[in-house]
Length: 373
Image (tube, rainbow, N blue to C red; front, side):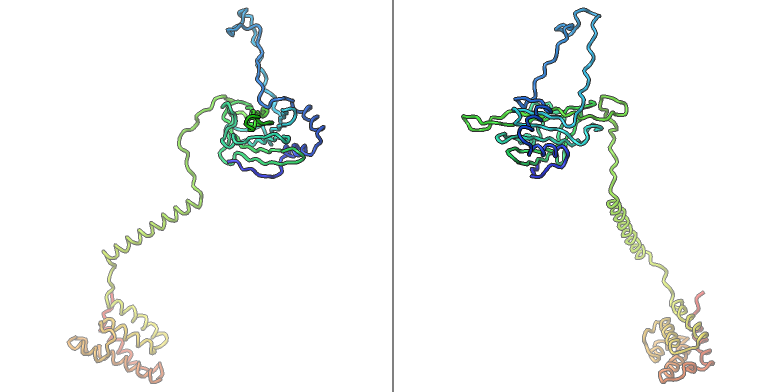
């Protein structure tokens, strides 16, 4: 697509042409005569090749082996920019760029074309919209894929300056390749139809040179035809690795849950659970004395071992009436209830039970609840 913007040129080439917009007509005529070849037609002139008189029509020398072939013509010297004037100075053309050397085959080359035309001259850019550079199909360049054409116009003092910025590529394996394009232009209309009398405008040859390849070869090698490895951005790799780790964690969690249900862990016996509490109570009691909290923990551990839950001492006695440990359990619970009652009445925590009663309680607990091995 071609985007047409009204803006001033920014390159030195454009500034030079823009300055000509305000120059007097006499100066313009002198510049056109001195710096660019004058021509009536803007199309490319036909080139007539000189004939070597020593070569016959068949292409072989007349005199046999004494023929010395002429030296090959030297490559044209690149100029930047190149100029052209046609239609008796009504159209002036400049072609150039920032750097015409050191390009690579297939590399994108920026080229700027300036067309300075007088009023009454019409330029048709529709062919550029259709990616056509040469009307006869002899394109040595082609437009690049992204934003290949940009055209801006500036009008002043009866003149119009067209600034055409192109991005082109060439795949011709030559040290220098001539760049030019064809456009349609008209300076008059057809009397019968009142439509523009179109002619062909060919820009002057702008030589784009390239740097030599490693072996200075003239052929394009296939190179490595193996698929190139795709390098993913670090953010994409992070998402992939993070997502994979999350999926793996979920799978391991599901597997662990399934194994736990199929093969549950060791069930802790009631006596081990009770003694895990009793050992801590006895240790704290020896260090700081037996208070209300210690006796409550003893009751909870003992009832937990017996499976009595929140039953009262009378209910536990009824539950264990046929058990050989009935009297021991009732006696131990009675001592704990006595200590808790004294604590509730505001008694001294160190005198909730006498030393003999505490020793008897501990001995009863050890008889009721077997200690784990």
